[in-house]
Length: 422
Image (cartoon, rainbow, N blue to C red; front, side, top):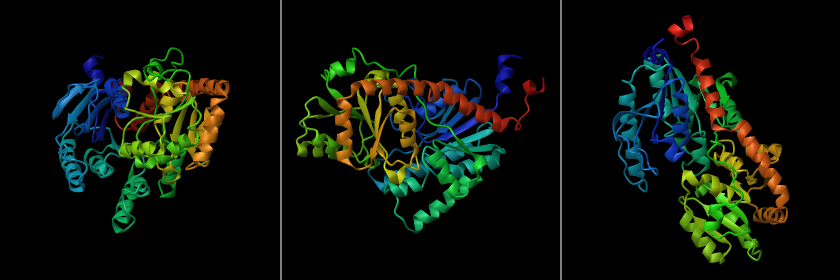
């Protein structure tokens, strides 16, 4: 069989996503990594809009089709008005939905259509494409909308929410398969009537070849003059759902412990307020840093002695924080501020890779941090278990291969290739 014939007989997978980043190695965007890995087995295409940012400064076509990493990228034009305006966000959304719908209807016929929840109403375009192409429809949920929007205060409970919820839940029940990140998310779907056999749990992942422990001669610690201090780090989005004022309150309780340092690494909507809050408390033990480039994730994540992870109980069933996999890969234990009855807490406890404290309890957070600072040997052992857990269960190659096996199982009877007949 020639390479051309082999390519023609590959099952074709079409992804729909608003902001497909142009290069996995430059950005670390999970969907990009998934598509590029699947492209080794499948004929993968993506219909997407304009990326919100391009930190790797990778060259890409603003519109039209191009190949990158083995993936056929169909980028459509959409407006990018300021997000501070509701009208601007709405205009951006409808411009993307219109152009992506037109483009997706005329791509080469896929065997599988996969839609993400960004934006959430993409699932309805997925239903249209399933009918148009007689394809299998997979909904890939990083969160469960609109439930998560209500709990984060982005939607108010009322007629609009109830209408959207009814439509979205109906769409979920009509999908051929839904991929979620956790058992908690699966349970939410079961509660709204999605058949259990249509739900698959595939967690997010980390490339353990790129993120690994660097505990000795750590350049990040040297650059930020951390010395031998005990470093508690929060790394990620500084948004409303994180409620990081509790983290700062714990820092305030420990401000007399000169060897304990608190780092907040990242950016987000609440960063200015958090900086002002720390200044008002006079916290000299707290440092804010910008996001670190992907090339330095190993040293930045490894620089912590303990990572702080927070998951608001109101949204615990709607998502699973993807940051935990990088923390595990860096061989660092975590302090999870959440409820006992969620998958994050179970992972931490069953893997013995950290501690769980009650959400919104600065005293409990401070007490556990203080204890940890005086028991570094125990934390080092947890870090070793964390690294092994990442390698065994959450490595990129393992998880994306699992995703590929699911797609093969879904399409094994969909199209019979010449290779299948031989």
